[in-house]
Length: 196
Image 1 (tube, rainbow, N blue to C red):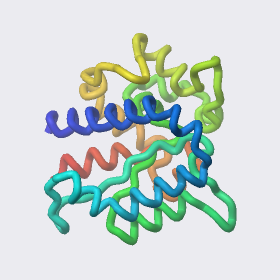
Image 2 (tube, one colour; image 1 turned 180 degrees about the vertical axis):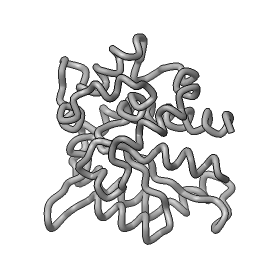
Image 3 (tube, one colour; image 1 turned 90 degrees about the vertical axis):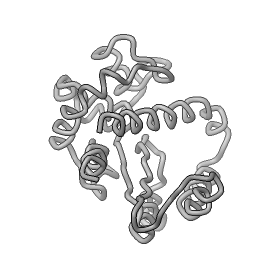
Image 4 (tube, rainbow, N blue to C red; image 1 turned 30 degrees about the vertical axis):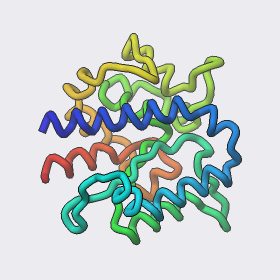
């Protein structure tokens, strides 16, 4: 089981690393272009899996789309709610949609009891508090000295995974409400992985 959880953290670190390294590209893309990328990933995931040479057995394996909400990452208007679109598409295709709101660092903060001392409104807004950092990352660096967004040691997190799962339950875990609430459902994914 520990190997499975470690693999999940390695995957999440990889995704975070790709995100950090691709920020320059993202800054130059319009939201509509980013949105097109998200739609294509959701719609083409089966082909992406086949083309990458991964083994995937429908009915046995499960595809999970893991994202962090990041302020303004989804356009949300009455006529164009991108979060709801992705959620509906994942439900239709049988994918599990996993979200951490406001950002990946919140999932990391859940590994520490100090997460309950943080201002939930500030977490949800996750405004910049320095030229380089937003509230959640800044608070994580206070709780976990030495944390670096692009490279960190996951051993401490793996040891605290049960604490993160329990702490997560005290925040929003409902996938529909996660669009606008502080929380995560990654802990539910970890529990599901443990059952299998």
